[in-house]
Figure 1 (cartoon, one colour):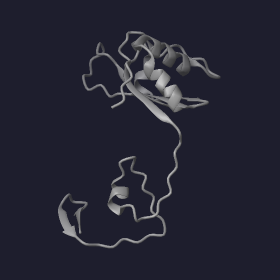
Figure 2: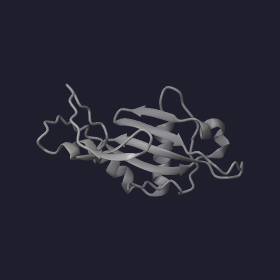
Figure 3: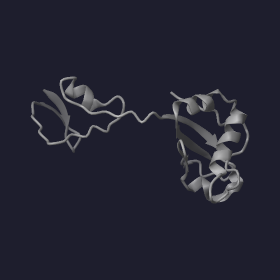
Length: 150
């Protein structure tokens, strides 16, 4: 018996049977589907041998539209994404933030996490600006870009 939430938001307890030729449980490491099915259900898993370093940084506002544009740089070990955070203040003087998601090898991620805030921002700017189209630095070097992994 499972508690089911209907499309209208109402809940009910009911017993049901689902069947499918293939079930893709792509709901993350703490998968509800995996926990619900239990260990008796055959599963195929794959480790990508990657670790994500995530943090929030303050953008250098002199860079114009970067506050409104998601930016991604593909590197040999994995991508870096710079994702603008919505600013509800509607204040031109308010700081502009972006979330960083840097997917890389576990050893590179550990190295990034060992850097000081200034070293991390310098490294991040270097990697965001390299490539076939050279970009100006996107982040100010103000020590507010400390990596944080919950």
